[in-house]
Each structure stands twice: as C-alpha cells, then as structure tokens.
Picture 1 (spheres, rainbow, N blue to C red):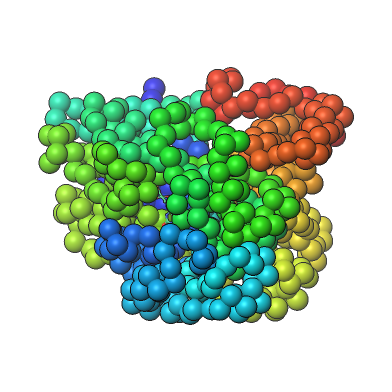
Picture 2: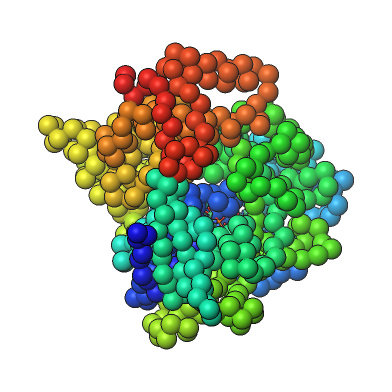
Length: 571
Ligand SMILES: Cc1cc2nc3c(=O)[nH]c(=O)nc-3n(C[C@H](O)[C@H](O)[C@H](O)COP(=O)(O)OP(=O)(O)OC[C@H]3O[C@@H](n4cnc5c(N)ncnc54)[C@H](O)[C@@H]3O)c2cc1C
C-alpha cells in the first residue's frame, strides 16, 4: 500500500525559491512539505555567482530588479550576517573601450543611490597608478578604474539554512525526493507522487496547494499537470580557481562586449559567467572547452596573468529566466512571476514561481507565500525579513571558539561562517560523539581546502538530514578547493559511515560517486600536465583501492542507489 502524507502546501524544489517559500510558510504556521530531487540548492542556486547585489547591469532596463535585489540584499544581510562577505569591485576603463570614464561614472552615480539599501559604499574613481597599487594583477593598459561595493553569500548554505529553519518549525523536508507525477481529482491538483531517488521508495503527498519551485525544471513539473510554462533558460558557466587570483573583484569585457568578472569567493576565486540559450538535458549538463576559452579570453584583458592560475573546477547552471522572444540573453528581464494556474489555466491547486534573482529570493518568497496564504485563508504576516536564519541570531567570538574547542583560528572562522552562532552546537555535540571514550577529543580536519572538520560532517549527518557524501560539497564545501576530493574523500566517507551506519558497499559507492563528480567538474578546464596528474590520481584510486566508477542512474532500487562496489570499505 502506498504511504500517504497530508499537508497544506507541498513545495517542489529545494533551491533558494522553494526553500525560501517553505520557511516563510512554516513561520506563518502553515503545514508544509518541501521535496528536492537532489541536494538542497543543488540546481541553479549552487551554480550562481552567489552575489547578493543590485546588478548594475539591470539599472537601465530593469530598475525594479535592481531595487528589489538591493532591498532584499539588506534583509539577507540582517537575517544571515554570518553567511555573507563583502566583495569590493574594481571596474577598469581601457582607452579603446566602448564607453569612456565619464559615462561609466554617470551609471555608478545612479547605482550609488541604491547602495545604502544594502550597506554598500559609494563608488570612487581611481587613477591608473592608484588602481595598480591596489590591485597589481590589473593590466597596465588601463586608463583608470572605478571601485564599487557588492556582497557575496554561500548560496547553497543559504538554501540549506532556509530549509533547516523550515524543518525546525515543523516542515517536512526531504532531499533526493522527486515529484514524478502530480495527483489530480476532477477539478484540481491535489498533491504529488514522490520517488526517493536513493531507496527507490514511492509515496504520495496530498496537499491543498502545490508550489512548483523547480527552477529551470519548472516547465517539466508544470507539464505533469498538462500545463505549459515557457522559460528562456540561459546556461551560465564559472571557472573556479584553486586560490584567490586577486583581493578585489575585477570586471572584464567579453569579446562580444558582455560584462563578466573575476571575484574572490570564499577560499577561491571565480570567473564568469556565460549566458547562452540552453536546449539540452538539465540533468546532464557539461561545460565545454569553448566556454572555458571564452571566459579566459575576457579575463585576460583585465588580468593578463590569469592563465597562470590553476582552475580546480567549473560550475554550470541554467537560469530560469522568464520567456522573451527576439532578445539577446543578456537583455532578457530578470524579473519574476508567480503564476496561479487556477486563474491562468483553470487548474486550481497549482502555483509556479519563475525567474528572479537569488538576491531577491526572500522578497519573491514573501510574495508567493502571500498568494498561497490568501488561498488558504491564513492571515499571518510575513516575518522572514526580521527573523534570523539559524546561526544568524548573534555574533560569536571566533577566537574564543578556537581556544575552547582547540581548533585553529581559520578553521573556527570557517565553521562560524557556515553555522553562525550554531558553531558551538556543531563543535560541542559532534566532537565528543566521535570518540565517546574521550570527552576531550579535538575536531580533526578532514578537508584542508576550506577547512571542514569531522565534527561538522557528523553534525550535518545527524542534525541536518544530510544523505550522501556528494551532498557535502554543497552543504559544507567538502572537496571543492584545490584537492577536489583527492585528500578528503576517503576520510569523509569514513566519518559519514560511522554517523549514518553505511554498509561497506554503500560507503564505497558514495566515495566513488563523489570522486566521479569532482572529476567531472574538474576535467573541462584541465590542460597539459594537469590532465596527466588527474589521470594518475584516478589510476591510484581505481587501481590501488579497487574502486569501480560510480554511476547514479538506474541501479537497483533508486536512481542514485548504491551499486555494489569493491574493496575500500573493508579497509
Ligand atoms: C551562472 C549563474 C549565475 C547567477 N548569479 C547570480 C547572482 O550572482 N546573484 C543573483 O541574485 N542571482 C544569480 N543567478 C540567478 C539565481 O541563481 C537564480 O535565479 C536562482 O538560484 C533560482 O533559484 P530556484 O530556486 O528558482 O532554482 P534552483 O536553484 O534550480 O532550484 C530548483 C530545484 O528544484 C529541484 N527540482 C526540479 N525538479 C524537481 C522535481 N520534480 N521534484 C523535486 N525537486 C525538483 C532541482 O533539483 C533544483 O534544486 C545566477 C544564475 C546563474 C545560472
């Protein structure tokens, strides 16, 4: 017999929009279930530039997008201060550039008016010498440069924080759970049939309302109800450098005149992004050599030494941009839409949220939740602009944290960054659990790139509903720096096996799948000796440890379910 769960609202998609809506609903006392077919934030949100900016670019044609994003950036900074970081930008002006410094300055003066909304500083004009002194990697060919102030966020962690807060307030949150069909009666959509992609188990969620927040996949979910929602999906690629290329973010212009930038992001630098119409399979997206070459060519003009830096991996995602015909990708509106399919198509019970920006997610979620609550007859006001996300409640003395738990200061800082005030809980609860015989056990660094400790992995497994090793790269940034899993994957699999009771076969599968994903993310940007180094590393894993390469399709019960693999876990 099929297991059935009843709730008021089912949210399909655990990206930033779905997670934001689930949290808003839970805060208003609405019973909600959130299902995500992979890991939280694993779709477009993870692949974004993670900027909570106003978007200087949208000022001219989409000023309301700039306004919404700046207002909401201010809100996000208030509710999740631990998850954000300042990104000062330099915009170099070249003598042969399409616009001179005077015009650039007019645009920046307009943008300055929005800056106070997001605690941003006004721009400054720098001479060539001043700019080169500030950022020596800049091209000496510049005429002058301008500074402007932006903010970044750990987008995947922001998704997780929203979903975890919703769960704390009573929501059901299930990752690796996909809506495979929508339930309907004669009149309306009444829920969804859900498949657990790890176990293969199927169950049903009956709901008064279903919110389709599936990002670029949303046309597919709407199609399950026989409806059409058109998007103009735009693929965007980033190159991720193993360490900081520059202290400041630096604008660059593509060969086609598009704006791009290299920017410090957490422990790495990122460069991008592309924006190309995408007609392919969203679940099998690859980054091409052309895309890598296009970004590098743009960056090289502003940062001539860029090719000397090692790219450790690439990211690719698809924007769920609102449909528009006859425009270049960059000219499309970044506005959003909440669709009531009862009103639009005569199919009540189903809503869709499309388009928008990560930077304005909370505001979009508020709008969508207002619409859902109006249907449910719920009159509670939105509280997400003032209620801190988990960990955002209070600042923490990181030096004291470092002393108390005997972790190095940079490690304490990164744990605080991801967990905010809950960092104490992470270190307090998890570290002793690892070796109960010693209350004085010290968290051990598993991945030095960020760094990530065993305590944090255990906490994520036991308290955050983490289900696979691959989830850790999003949730905790495991293995996404210089090592790409080479030095941390086996140790992390071991910690999670202890916490989650994985069998030897499952642990081996998890490890293989994780490494396969890291390899897939690393290979598009490799050249020369790097390819040889990667192949040697693969040979060491596949040969010496006897792994079989993981594949998450069609095995056993679930699409992502463990395939029996060989020896590692016995070791
Ligand atoms: C390259 C790039 C750079 C960007 N940079 C920025 C930026 O700097 N700042 C900014 O504000 N915005 C940026 N954006 C835009 C921003 O990332 C998106 O607007 C936002 O992340 C969309 O979130 P979402 O929740 O709608 O979609 P997603 O994050 O894709 O979430 C949808 C989720 O639904 C899940 N799903 C799909 N089908 C099902 C199903 N049947 N059952 C269960 N789950 C399902 C998917 O797995 C996915 O996780 C960028 C976008 C791209 C591509």
